[in-house]
Amino acid sequence: MQLNNKTYNIIELEETGSTNQYLRDILSKSSPVEGTVVTTEFQTRGRGQMGNSWNSEKGKNLLFSILLYPTMVEPIKQFIISRIISVAIHRVLSQFTDGIKIKWPNDIYHNNNKIAGILIENSLMGKAITYSIVGVGLNIAQKSFSDNIPNPVSLSQITGMEHSRADILDSVLREFFFLYEEMKNNNVEKIEQEYFQNLFQRGETCLYKDERGEFRGKIVDVLPSGHLVMEAESEAEKRKYAFKEVQFIIEK
Image (cartoon, rainbow, N blue to C red):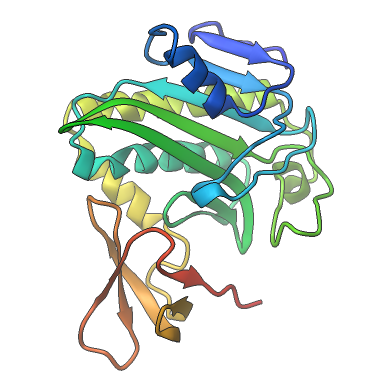
């Protein structure tokens, strides 16, 4: 993939285990500049949230990781990094099609299908984040997917057109670093609002499942910690969830 923009410190790989792991390996030996981006044509051990695998056909999609040193972010508020990358991708994809939404905590959906996944790995020391690696898998041109992937879709499948991966990567990075600077300038509230306004199923009464079983409810808030706040039908008390504590039941 030929990148058009040389503003960023980009490391381009043909193949690697995972771009997140590649950055961690570099960090164990040196201190690369903040904003270093690693891209690859193919990952042999791509991962998603909570150890889930991420499968991608070689040379068809965007697979990249961004290195940050967000020392100004309190660990309890580290979810702002998830918001920033989610909003950045949402902005870019919304230029091509309607129906792009952010599925809490940080998947990107088109209608009921997943077009992108995000894996953020933070290194904490005391009350500070020493570094953050923001990993992204974004489906651009893939036309067929493994049967064990439940609901994938690519941008080309949505639009019926071919798209430049390099141009889309450049656009995502521009939006991401713009929002990152906004965060540094304490303009966090606008980012939080944009994230919430574009949440998948926000304000809708839908089917979910937690440790108590299935229930119908709606999303009412996402806290600075990243916890999801929901109202269940026929309940006065709100429910609060950390990652993986509630499951979205996608109704066709």
